[in-house]
Length: 257
Image (cartoon, rainbow, N blue to C red; front, side):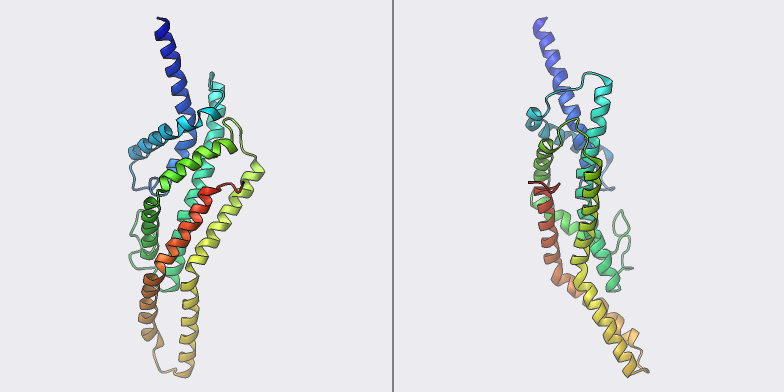
């Protein structure tokens, strides 16, 4: 019976260890670009969260010195670990939103915002949908999920289990991430915006020089074709820049060395 009792005690420790890790991994997987999309069934998301928990748990055993023994301790861990997991997940999700925003800005600037506007689960122009699908495919080809698992493991050294992040520092970090996402989106869409400005200036000059010419009917096909041609030329560069920014975040998510 002593062997059975020791086995039961070990089983409970392993179960509590994975439960604590799941509290941090679960929010990350719910917002994970690609795996956390609305088109992915809930059961698949839960299975992926459990798989990531099994991967992360053995690596963070030295970082978890005390497992919860009471309901109060587990409730406190549920709060702290969920906050950290949500911060990581939101940081990753903002990069996908930056790609969506860049596609929307580029489509709006080149009069392509109404073409196939609901191509995905979330309504967005076809240009944004194309960039998002391409970005997710590129990220998965670059072993994005493996790097995120390593990043989650590294966060246990920065945010110990049971330690709630400082509210002021976390809010400042969140503002910086949102600002960085919008800056990245505008940087990616800048060529389309510049071409749109030049197009409208040229259209205004032609309209002033030749009032009798219906410049709108002449210029609309030009800006549409120009937008598609620019997308063909710049999409690889846009996705490369986006991937570089994402890799930089994964390497140093909270701006510490």
